[in-house]
Length: 113
Length: 112
Image (tube, rainbow over all chains, first blue to last red; front, side, top):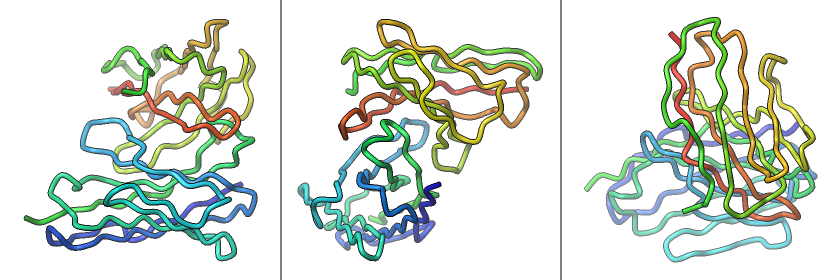
């Protein structure tokens, strides 16, 4: 089955700096890669996703890159703000697998004012 | 707002008891899945239902079971509760044909 590894497990950045979180996956058939942000006591919220037919996607301060050959994808947050502090999860799935997502272990991001 | 509603939001059960958690989606997606998220960990896939049939299962014992109804709402049932079942249980819909997957608010289960 799919295995997703996520690094780092914790990340502390100064407000205004960039944050990068990296994930690797094992199943070459995976073709959908979402990123979720989870604040304390709340559900995971989708912040951006990418499909295997593109290598990069950007939405304001957030961008995701995908390297299918190397089987890794990354989340980039620029100009970080204190409200970006949360736990971020990457995940992978096959489109044909419906809702079956395999999650990474999470990255706790702390943005210092 | 994802349009995915779960109930109850919080509950406390005693070891050995049974629990039923519920999920409904305004969008009427015909695929629903359930996840368990223990404290400090990522969500773990329990199982998925498609058109009222179980369609994929993670590494969870048979005491975790589910139902999907004709209106695509769903239930997660857990029998013989154990302390380690304490977690946030998340329902997710979407995912058909590569659609975006959204989570409900979750049900916090504490087993004492």
